[in-house]
Amino acid sequence: MAVLLYFDGLCGPRNPGGVAIYGFVIYRDAEKLKEDAGLACEPWTPSASNNVAEYRGLIEGLKWLNGKGMYREVEVRGDSMLVIRQMKGEYRVRAERIRPLHSEAERLSAKFLGIRIVWIPREQNEADDLCKKAYARYGVGESPREPALIWRH
Image (cartoon, rainbow, N blue to C red; front, side):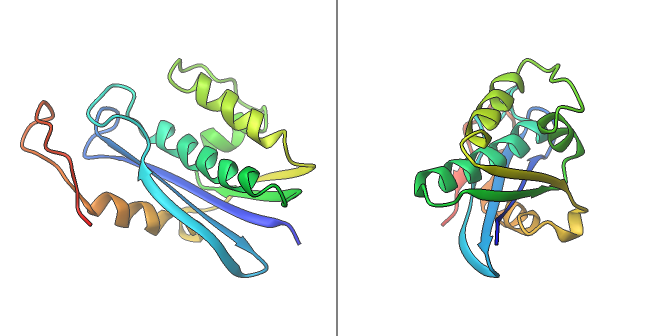
């Protein structure tokens, strides 16, 4: 059976320009192999956006799978219509901040013998709650200019 990679991302309290968080969950045969979440990019910058966070979730999941070197086929599932359609070649990549992320995701995807990319509703995305929980662990200062982003363990 193919490995399942769920990816997601979010940016808050504003998008773009807030705190962008990525997440991914990987399963093989109903066994959870890996889950991870973290900052998608430097917070409070113009590069922090939902789309950047979504791509970072996809990239980090693909990197983990590639690092293991034993998975030949993967089914990628995400709720970002933009990322899914761009990865399938149905949409062009117009945003400058997305182009290098898209290129990296394509490069990593090409290392698999088979890859299937599927859009799913948010309610079915295993990585959605992971992103929300990771975001909740960050403390945000009074002003975007403050370096008050603190990781709460």
